[in-house]
Image 1 (cartoon, rainbow, N blue to C red):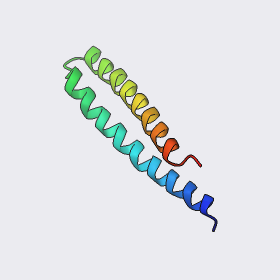
Image 2 (cartoon, helix red, strand yellow; image 1 turned 45 degrees about the vertical axis):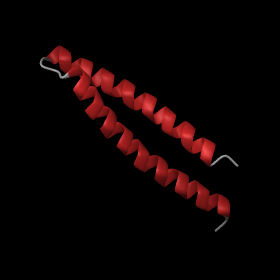
Image 3 (cartoon, one colour; image 1 turned 45 degrees about the horizontal axis):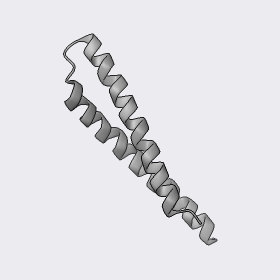
Image 4 (cartoon, rainbow, N blue to C red; image 1 turned 90 degrees about the vertical axis):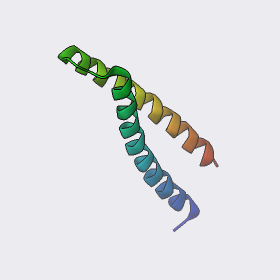
Length: 70
């Protein structure tokens, strides 16, 4: 197994774990901000959650890409 294969495997596993963490943490953060009490509030929560997780995943991917650039 070459070093590139190992780096690709580490990158994939790290990205998967961090993506799960970002999705969960952004959901908690979005819930604290919106605290939905109605159907409209629940829709707002879902939109905020999606936005936060999208931004978080882009940041995580950029950080990992910087570390594994080579």
